[in-house]
Image 1 (cartoon, rainbow, N blue to C red):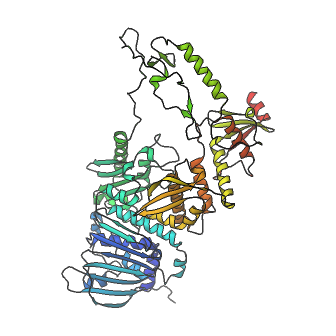
Image 2 (cartoon, rainbow, N blue to C red):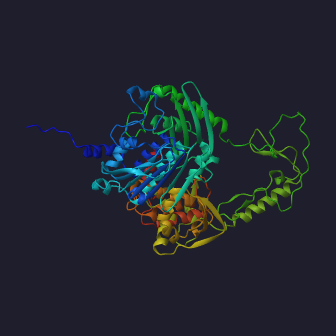
Image 3 (cartoon, rainbow, N blue to C red):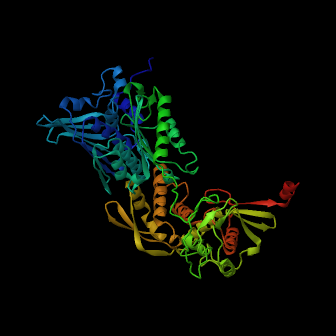
Length: 631
């Protein structure tokens, strides 16, 4: 008995749709690519319920005739190619003839289209690959496609879609990619809660329109034209490298692609220029001879093979390095200073002016100002010594070129100031004083990074940054549970611009932000103002904290959905972001009081050994270990 048989077209289309249409964002990608291939200059996208209920794409392209409208939904029917050789001269986004049949196989689809020379358009209704109606209609020139109830006939596939905010995050990322590729088009999206319209313009204008926050000011251009490849785009300055959510966009022949080797080449150019845990942003367009690039690898068409890959990678790396060398900001030397290089005697150094100094001036004074972190008083170096300009000696240190006339008086004044300062503490130490903390003589600081103290088990070495981060994290969570978080109004609210993903994240966690002391007020367009912040970060960068929280929530929403969070809870993510922003840094000199309180508060925690992300906070060297080290 024969057992092999052909599958019905409807079943075959549903199986094929699984490779092409992964989620609602895939539908938008395919339809926008078709609109771009049809010569549209204006593309409108409408989304309802994150694309599960409705996706509509309207364009003003050339439209389709009655026959073409019906043929477009047949498998492997396309106007882009006619023979295999055409694959080596592709200039269009689509060419397989699989997208439209795959979409209509898993949805209820309505098409309205009209060409410029036709008096009437065509309306087509398709339900799960079955054509239910085709008749004339009145419509604008171009094409409008409505996709309703995606995966309605594949309940298992629909069940595994993420939450609305998760799917909306994927949609917005796909919209960003399509908008960046087609910067010459007017393109808009309306999700029901927010609408974005992007004007035609240059690549740099499109970048700024999409990501806001003056991102274009953080970029440097890359522009190289060779016989092998043309490279044009932008890379971020090293000082703007990101710890998370870096923007990576590669476009080859007008197609957004993923290419691991190119990514490694670009990021490798930043070696020794950025911190190891950060990544640069880049927006790079490449133009290659179509005969030397193969895009027919995967149905998504996001992967490519390059015939001259080695040469292209070399040119790309050299281009990025050249841009960094030419445009990247380097530390500037201030020549308008009172410090002058040592010159050999007898070279005719000009006489220095006699600079008067106030009697109460102390060149070594430390100014605490409004911050708990001491810093050198910002006074002109020239006035630190009476009547002398200073120079650097070969023996080390700065010396006057001539004798200081009142050195005895100055030295006595300096010593008196030092005695006074030794009896004073900073106005606001990092942590408040408590009676149960270790005594100052039991702690000292090493390399301005570690606190060293003794315990019954041996010598304890504490990472001061991780310890303070852990303390702030636990205190914040405790205050939230007790509803003791205090909010402080900002005298001059700071304005931030949020992109679509960030606004979706804000809508999701708005109540949580309010409960921990933040108050964000909508102004207009994409602008919001930070009207109040938690008291624990009143002196920190509130704007940076808010953006980090929103980026964290945005990433988790896209990767894990609303009901799942790798940190376990949204408030824990917020606590970690805020603690990182407010914690003291390595390289910060601590007073005795600060070391006492950090050590005491850390050891009072239930689990003082690890940070919230699992990094070790301290280590103990016991007596046996000391003996082995000392032989």
